[in-house]
Image (cartoon, rainbow, N blue to C red):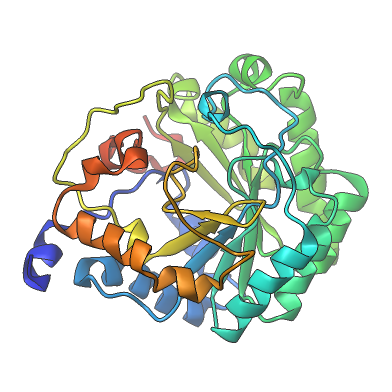
Length: 337
């Protein structure tokens, strides 16, 4: 397939949408610590896959700080993971990865994947190290259960850029989905975190929350109004059925991820894709290789070629991936239905 054909056929499929006002959307981006670098990174992020261009280093790296979790949420993919080899990433392994990322001028990392990042006892140290090495944007996703006291102050002082907290629904749904968390508790923790980071962190880290559309669609405006005064951004995701071993989808879809990012498991193993939460398709191991070796390696390039040839469904993790079939339901500013 020629580059012109790839440009025509490549569809950058979004899997998250904004519930926020246009003004808050603008401020979310413009108030980044390194706005100009972010703009360059986003241009590369959306353009390189369409051009089938492999950058000298990934545009983003996900480090799985922890594969452990302190909740058992029914809508999560964790119950459907076959290899339940739980653990936390050791700092020395992380340090090796971050040093290489910094040497290659990487813009962003995320310290989460399949587990709850705040369970790693070195999380604050991990954030601090990445920022000192020059990583411009450091973030992670959390269920928010441990976001209080010394941890929140530590994250603020370490230089965390933003945090995404999953708040899946209004009170009735949230209390069922996220137990023993409660809606009242997560509201209080977010408000306290928001006030503290504005007082001692110069507004950082910014706080984004995300909900599953299924659990807020009856009254998204109420959800938005409840949280808007102590968050910086509010998004939502469609709900996925992770019990499916073969997800109905367009076989001709070409995935953008092999041209964008690499994900590193807590133990150093590197799967093909962030959607390969079962680790079915290994392409490398940070304990034995560098990130660049894996990114430019034969296995990764073979998988890119499979994508180009529209043979994606021959890859095990692609059969279970929901991203190509995610309903593009669009943004709903300020909770509009």
